[in-house]
Image 1 (cartoon, rainbow over the protein chains, first blue to last red):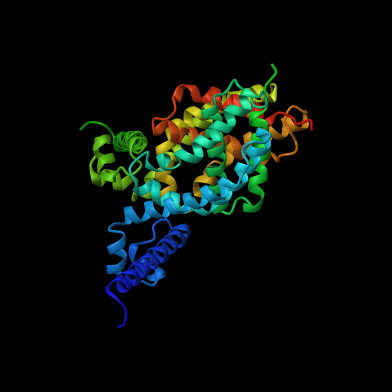
Image 2: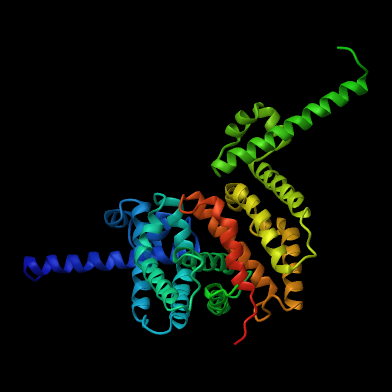
Length: 197
Length: 197
């Protein structure tokens, strides 16, 4: 083999990085279909051996957390593209649309993560999008376009409950995936409306 | 032992019925704390032997379905006490309050049932309360007090999503159980409000 030691090291690192990418993609895809997908199935789908798989991800727990982290990073990218400064009602609808795509894709990976990771870990991993949503709701409340008699934390919970519930009904074939973002946005529109009673 | 054959048979039947009751109560209580509670733990909590337990409930699946059926029957009793003929907004709040008590108690039994029973079975078992809720929403829509631009089926879904989501947050210690019925009722009040846009 030609090349210096440094070149060889670099090539090995690139190989390793490529394997990590393939394993993560395979994990997202396998767990996305079946939250109980085994390490062996994921290795097979990634086209790597068991030794390579366990070399990068020593346990199923580590791999599931890494797959979910990857999905959340992707979601973050999509969400960063949203202008957060407009009318809070429009921004909320845009956040719902982007988050829904992620939730729908992450659904079954989330099930795997919730079954495997320590309690509260999945919730912690959502801290950043959660903060963004709560900040938006607080702004809407202070601008008088969102109701104030319910806390921003609860109103953010409602967004999550609707997404999770709809994702479960889509998986069970009881709801059409493409209708969901509009249904949730129209529902939240009512939820956040100031109450004059 | 004194008594006729008929008296003895009757006593045996009463014993068997009492065992069934104790097993169901134990199952509701054990599964309510831990959705993965084993048959052995449930037998122990009921104070019956394995033979008696399996004599009445030949598998964990049969027992989990029976425990959920019992909880739903109890919920039905509570719901039957509600006057369904008043202002749909008040009836909805009353339905939410009663259903919440059931959901909070059934939470972890539902998790066990969803993991164990065939897909769709848990949903089927809710057909009766579901029909009642949808009928109420349709009446509210036809009387003009509930919005019509979202289907009664979706609005009923929203009630379930809120209950399930809140139940999960209560289990995780992120939400105070006693606040939930009011939070959900206030939220639904906004959800169903007719939209003038």
